[in-house]
Image (cartoon, rainbow, N blue to C red; front, side):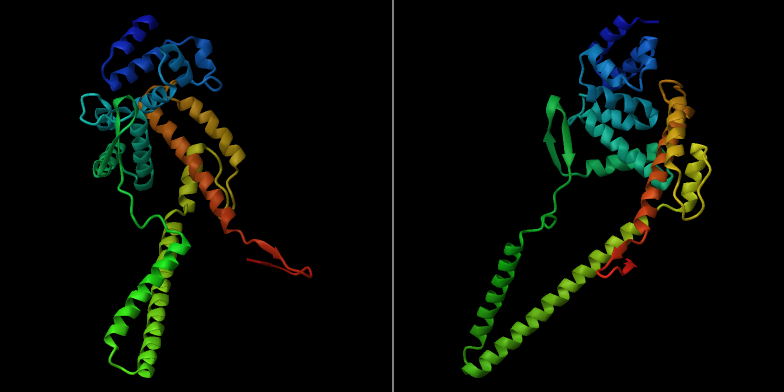
Length: 307
């Protein structure tokens, strides 16, 4: 077995990030017992970063990717310096987080989600340089995403009205003043009606999208029961919140039991991620119930009603 000093030298000499992350894990396994026992108060990332004189964020992201196993090899390849546009470890960690979210949402394998995330990442048109010789891709911003100030919108509509009026007046130049003014007022009325109808359509479309997003983000009670089974707690009655104090206690106990540093097997890693995901489901379910409660509004005179 190589000593800690030899592993540190291997880390500094390694040319590939995946190999560095593997060496990081080996160094942590040889950490003193008092350091490993105090992982709840002293983060292993900070301890390793100080030992290796390496950025703590890089160490944290590398260990997260290492714990994900072979399913993220395609992401590791993008971080290597041999790539045309090597990816930063922070970007790689963000892509892994997105892939895990897809895995929980669609119940697919992590490797499948990683492939989907990388396809979307490669489709981003803009590449820009960041620190340490790394690059990142970003989506092309929509020109319609940022809403212009209200005064600019009003000025734009006024400009459109004036342009239409100039065209109509030119075409009505041969008419007398009375009929011409009558047609111009009718045109202005029709134009206002068209703009109001267009505004109603936009509002209706936004409401439809908002309702769709609310339904898609709802947590089903069957998911809550599965989450409670994972946390080894009793599920609540339908419509009642989860006991988060007990769920938090179970999450703390189970994550310590299945933490990759304590039990490095693949099954323990899967259980570790399942416990964290189950706790998030319980939190989201309680927030959902809290948002559905009617609010009591008190009016003048002491009368009250729920809204």
